[in-house]
Length: 79
Picture (cartoon, helix red, strand yellow):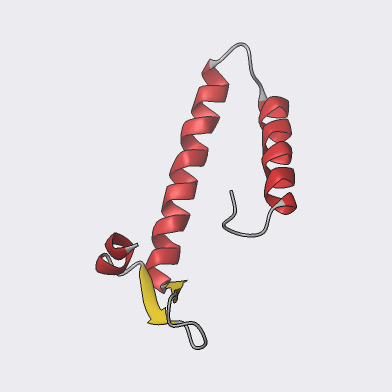
């Protein structure tokens, strides 16, 4: 987490009711970097799908659906 704060991608503040913890928030720069990373990953996956005769876009759609379902079943940050 300190690395994210050092890069300016997140800010860290004391938790208002629990001194043992802190609140971490993405900055505008952090949201931009996250968006770039997601777009890069999507390009890499799309290219792999184009060149892999064993998988197609339907496989990717199924995988995304499964991951979303898993994430929906768990509170944020518990995976």
